Length: 204
Length: 227
Picture 1 (cartoon, rainbow over the protein chains, first blue to last red):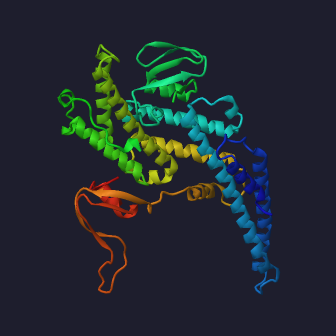
Picture 2: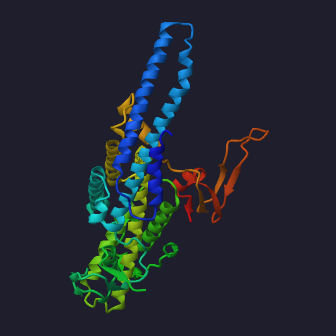
Picture 3: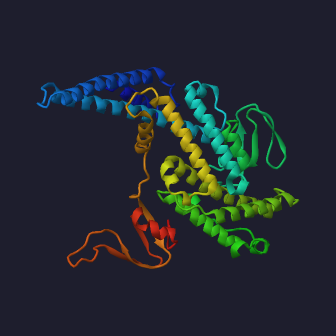
């Protein structure tokens, strides 16, 4: 079945919708590209044949018209493979962008292993673009867009530390000791920052 | 959702009003306009005009509040400090959310955004250009360069742009009318005598739900606002 490997790529993405991004499937992609190139080569030969028989003799050659359906099927298959590959890359790209907003500019090791080299490059370029935009907002006033992702309901938040971080300086200068299981009452902006970096969590 | 409730301005009018007269806007007015711009942007399916004036004025206000907060002595013990800080957080959130919504719209439909450059601020223009280049380069490198096709270079750009999603102007939105408008034409069908079939009059303070494409122009001229 033509373009079935490309369909597998899409199925793989669909299966991993709620979980972490799966490793970059370079092998399947390479296979799809080879398949597309092969189809294109075959199509090219057939088109040459049709063009030749068309120019050689005016009486319609018997072989020429029967090649047209084959050519259009191959063309459709090439388009489908191209579309699937682009959808795969585009979807992964969107997921990587959302990682930047939720986790921050530095990716943990296990996530970075699942990305291809191009994707890592895209991530660092996106990082750069986003930070230079954030710096330039409001005539270079700068605004941190990743703070306050949810509307701040209260001024202070009760958080519990889940990691041994050590001394941490809050935004108004006081230094608090973050040891495992210690509870703190901090400003919402600080709390959000700590929760985003998975150093602490909310106490419900 | 809580963030849609109106945020009452807790700062005393007297404090801020003397210092903030940018374009004759009191801080209360600034806040109302910022909030309305934020809601409009949130509910509209396409990118609206960038309110540069509001953004700059909000930055000034935020800086002002921050200066007061830093200079006051009884931090976290005075009620006044707490109220100011809450207001600061909320204002900061609305501004952030406004810019974030615009960013995500630019990222989703970068070519549509770049076609209507007057809606973007200069920094957003730069952002949209670099983002689009980054995206095209990434997609080309990872997928398309291996595929041989006849007109490879031109083909790639055009195909990419065509395959990307486009903003949906047919989304339905709720809105409320600020100034009454007569004779909004909804479709081009004509009845027997040659007059357009669907005309609607909007009266002030009425609320409607309609497809976005019909009211796009009214929203730009601030005759309606989205709810």
